[in-house]
Length: 626
Ligand code: ADP
Image 1 (cartoon, rainbow, N blue to C red):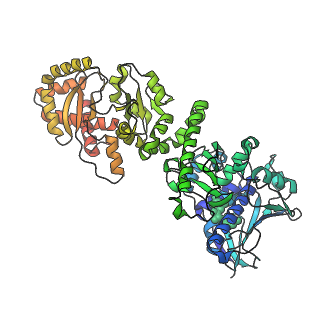
Image 2: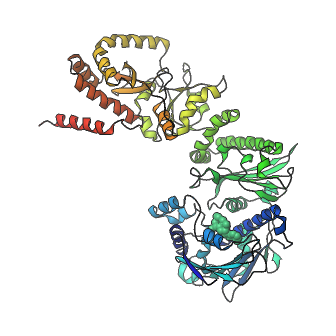
Image 3: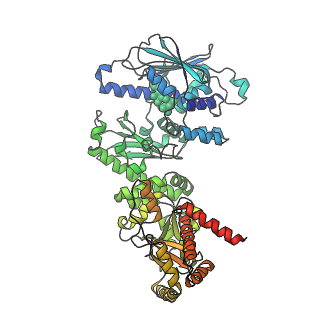
């Protein structure tokens, strides 16, 4: 096969450009990335050989580093799984990560690229921070052909067949940049062919790699599994580097959780909570995951049976002594030991999160902002632990601009308060704070929790079945059945409403005719300043819930709501007068505008935007005069 030329996929080329111009300040990490890839390749080879014994031979798995100071080259070799021609194109010519487009877009819009790049692992491409040119020679396990990939990272690469490697695996050879010292003028410029530079980087970033890293005929890493070492011995840096190896995330983790379970089932674990949701977390629920090890031997990553779905953002390792080495994904689910591990891991995570909430509120808020939405899914999915989630859940509130827990809310509750007042709405907190539904509560000095995640609606509907009987009820103030008033006040209000009813009669009639299929009732509103507010009937679906159902492809049942009109508002006063004088058409048009305005305040769109705009235009024309 002669040499073939290829062009990098557009996104890959863009990332490469960033690498070449070296926006990332710590160039050393290219070596960590290459060693990480070599280690993954050795893991994959082991697993493949376990499945197919014919592939197994007795070569000694290792990662080998060779440096040539005179010729300015550095090679990292492994005898792992290797790549065939198609895999070379697929893995090194494109970026398969979901979220790449989003990342690049953000990087372009944002001038601080170096910060952003740290949020997105560029893996192999980081070689171009240190090298002008790179050569990858690789032979896939179970094949006899060896291929060479060559590139200077500037748009294109070539692939050709190469002299056969004696065993499968990959060698990445870097032709090191030589003008670093002159060009960059920063203290980071190093000679990556220098023995002590290499040793320094490896001991800092890759010491825990479980395969031997051989340099000048000596193994230079301790290979100690970090989760097996006593906690007191491990530095924060070591945790961070291990996390980066494991996740290919370039940021530091927010926190780690060490598990050392002894008893009927023994296992160790090291879990991490990332700082922020990765770009693809919400798009790709597969991207999280816990790796399963048995007796220090890597078995599989993303072992879903070890952790519930609503903790899928947690990354890490669980290492068990009690499972058979040949365990397969298929039988994991029915494995009682796995269930025990899952339960105790879950318990540990809840405990640690509770501790974090108490000890470092700021850090916990960061965690909640990134992952609270996902954790809250568990309130519905995992009834056994919903209380645990409620205990750490943070909410926005009308009390102040901070976050609050339910128990903090409870400590501020008024003695006569029946439950926790809640209002769910669209994601925009300031819009929710302006909802006319809050007015009577705020006027009476009550605090209302403001819920802006889609899952909150479902929680509000179900919470009172889920929560233990003694827990304070969550009361959805969008419901007509929930009110801030005492029995006496309700009576007084009812009387007031009754006295207003005759005044309202004509207007109510027109409203009910205008919205025959949308309204079940029209009532005078009390104690609010806005002209109108829409409420759900006792069993009704809220607008948000309707939107959620629609988004999920369902057709929600037709809802009838209650329209409350504020008789002391000048607009309503005029409408009452107009209705009494029989100007039905005009009243009806104005009611349509009011109705749509209420929808807008709820975060919904007017049902007929064209009609809405037309009515407003007419209104403007008439108010501007001739
Ligand atoms: P990531 O490691 O985050 O997937 P990389 O850019 O580092 O991203 O690598 C892309 C892919 O190339 C890897 O997922 C792997 O499939 C393949 N690859 C990289 N290095 C090696 C290697 N030494 N041996 C085998 N495959 C490799």
